[in-house]
Image 1 (cartoon, rainbow over the protein chains, first blue to last red):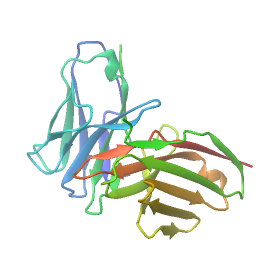
Image 2 (spheres, rainbow over the protein chains, first blue to last red; image 1 turned 30 degrees about the vertical axis):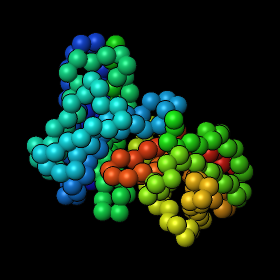
Image 3 (cartoon, each protein chain N blue to C red; image 1 turned 60 degrees about the horizontal axis):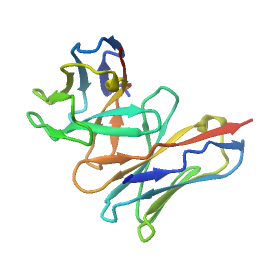
Image 4 (cartoon, rainbow over the protein chains, first blue to last red; image 1 turned 45 degrees about the vertical axis):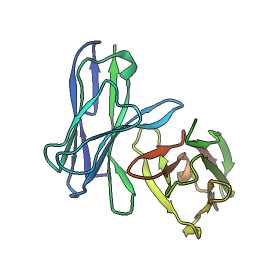
Length: 111
Length: 109
């Protein structure tokens, strides 16, 4: 989906390191979401944003922080990575029909 | 409590077969329903929204049964390219979505 991009595509971190995942959209949507996907558990919502300058907690927010300083970008931060945060992270935007469009994902491994 | 439950499968069907998936949801106040497909190591992609009256898109038909709190997806004349994992997604109220764990489909030549 060319409208939603994620950076980086892959990353390996050591326990305790920090990193920021970037999600960018070119479709001017208000709503943006961060999910994680783990085997056998489906996608789970970490945080979401309903517009520039706003963020809200989802189902599994602990250990993550987010910021939405610009409408086009939604950042997901890990301040002190843990092995339990090894996962595939997907960003999504949502349109007015509640349909979501996902970025290609970031595969994160924490050792 | 799992908000959304799906049979994980796998479903292995021959080309040309008809296959149906069901998904149940726990919150009777749920408002929006969707089917997504996800190919291996790729992002989920919207297949179709599910409307109260049921809806069809080519070989795909989705139905919603609010009384029994389930949604279904029917795929007719299965193609090899239909092989994927199918995710059921429900929006309860507000802005949060709940995903099922997915049903794996393999279409065999």
